Length: 577
Image (cartoon, rainbow, N blue to C red; front, side, top):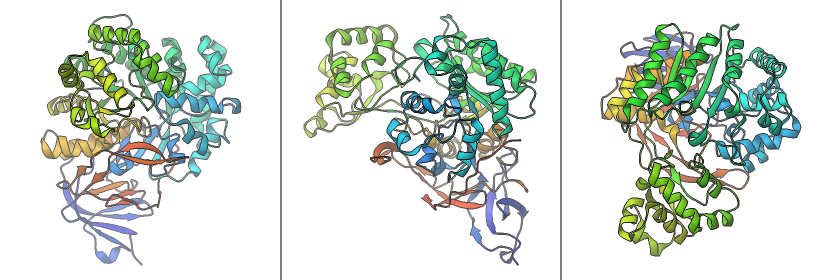
C-alpha cells in the first residue's frame, strides 16, 4: 500500500523560514506534509513532477473581506488564483456577526459603500440564519471554500448588537456595562474558535470607508479607552491577534510625518495592552514622501525592541484603481463635497457633478490641497476606456492633465466633462502608486508582512489580490530586490506567526499541505478584465488572472491546476484553541 497520497517530486523547495532553497521531494498524507526527502514513485498514489519548478508554502493573506463573497464565490478569487491559501476575515471591524434579525439588512447596507460589496449580491445569497458569533462560525464552516479561513470579531457589528442597533451606537459612547458585555461576547467568540478582533478608526479627510449613508462607521467613533479595554481583555489568552487600522491625522498635528507616526503608535499601545500581536494597516512605501513609512517603521522597531509584537502590513503591491462615475465610486469619500456629490441615484449624481457652483468648489479644494488624493492625483488619471466611438481618438489613453492642457481647462473639469460627454461611462485608471523596489525592500527589512489584498472588497475598482504574484515577479525575478527566501517568509511564515496559524506558513513535516508549485520564469499577471459573475444578475467586477502556477494545493488537495479551478474546494474554517 502506498505510503503517501501524493508526492511532489524534484522541485526546489523554498520553505518560508529564510533557509536557503534546496531540492527534495514532498510526501503528502491525509492533507499534511508527511515527509520531506528523496522518495520513490512507488511510495505514492499520485506523483506530481515539479522538475524545474519552485515548491513553496501558500501565501497567507491577513486582510480580506470574503465574509460575504464566500457565499457566492467559494473560490475566494482573485487572491486564490495568485497563491493565497489561507485568509483572515472580519478585518477593519466589519462583518455580519453578532447580529439581531432586525438588523440583517442594515448589516449588509453597511458593507455596500465602505467595502463596495454589492447589496444585491448579499441579499440574494446570505440567509442570516445566525445571530451569535458561534452560530456564524458554524455556518461558515459548512460553506464550500477554496482557502482556509480564520475569523476575527468585527467591532462595528459587535457594538451595534450590544447597544441595540446602529443608530443608538452612533449617537453615544458605550457605558461600562455595555463594554463588559462586548468583552463577554468576544470571550464567547474566542471559545468558538475566533482569533482576536479587528477595527478601523478613520477620521476627517482620511475617512474613505464610510457607511452606506456617508456617515462614519461605528468603529470610527469609539475612543481610545474603549479599544484599550478590548485589548486588555485579550491579555488572558495565549492566542489571538488584533487587526487595526487608524488614520486620525495625528489628532490635530499638521506635520505630514507626525500624524502617521502617532497613529501607528496607538497600535503599539494596543499590542502592549493585549500582550498579543497587532497588525497595523497599512504602511505604504511611497517614494513621494518616504519619511512617512520610515517614521512608521521606526515605531514598529521601538515596540519590538521592548518585546511588544507590533507588526506593520506593508502595501508592497503595485496597484492602480479603475474609476467610473456610473459605479458607486467611493475613493473620493474622504472629501465632504465629493462624497455628497457621489451619493444618490445616477441622475441625481450626474446633475450634482455638472453643477457649476459645485464644480467651482471642487476646483478650489483640488488647487489648495490636491484632494481627493486617496486614489492618486487626479491629474494622473488615464482615460483608459471610452465608450462612444467618436470620442476615442480625442481622449483614449490620455491623462486628465493632458486633456486639460489641450482644452485649456482645469483638471477637475477635464475629468468630469469627458465623463459627461461619454454618458458617464468613461473608465479612468489612476496612476500606479509610486513605490520603488528599494523602498519595498527597506520596509520589509522591519517586522512587517507583505500584502495586502482587500480580497472580496472594492472588486469593481481594484485587484490587489495579485500581490503574491507581483512580489515574486517584480521584486524577486525582475529587479532582484528580494530573494525567494525573503519573499516567501513575508508572504507565508511571518503572517502565519502574526495570525496564529500554528501548522501553516512553512514547508515542514506535520504542517498542512498548503503548497504552491510554480515556474518562476513563466509567472505573470494577466491584463485586467471585466467579468460578469456576481449574483443575482451577473453584475460586473474587475479581475486579473495569473500564469505560471502549475498547482496550488490546499490541505493536500489540488485547488487550482494551471490556473483552472478544480472545484474541489478543500479549504477549512480554522478554529483556534
